[in-house]
Length: 211
Image 1 (cartoon, rainbow, N blue to C red):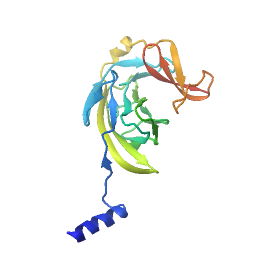
Image 2 (cartoon, rainbow, N blue to C red):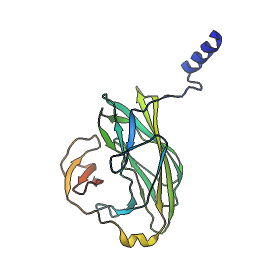
Image 3 (cartoon, one colour):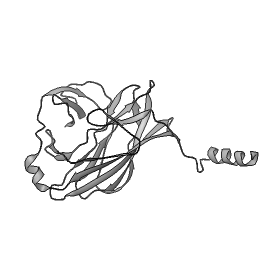
Image 4 (cartoon, rainbow, N blue to C red):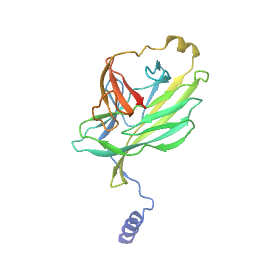
């Protein structure tokens, strides 16, 4: 028995066959602020127009909440299982990534403060001539000192665009700007260069790129 335990310890020390522990401190919130269970699967199909860039997109308006009291270094691993066209985007927690093909990807890590929520800004930017379903599986990963220390919840999102006529009924997202942040979550002015995160009077959060 002792030999078996010793072998397992050695394997862990050398990084062999050891997976990170699980941690349920970090949860997904839907557009209404409801907590989503581990392994949940949701479907979104409402087409919106980006008021700043003019893109047509489907955005589930998800957030990640750190329900603990301490700040945490998090990233999101995500697998794009299918994408019939257009681009997939995720901005979390401070960097944005774009993908046009299926595959396994990870966001850079960043700090999510204890007791706070961080918008994922994850959306499927449509190619209006290509309908279908973009399916993405997300998993929260907790890090410390550059290493994975725990796996958080998983979530599957089906972005469904199956009716080109929906473009004629795009939701009008035009609204007044309420507040603007940089990617570190600090309030900033309208003239700040780079990618800004803007909260609108209708409750939506959008990205703005100032050159």
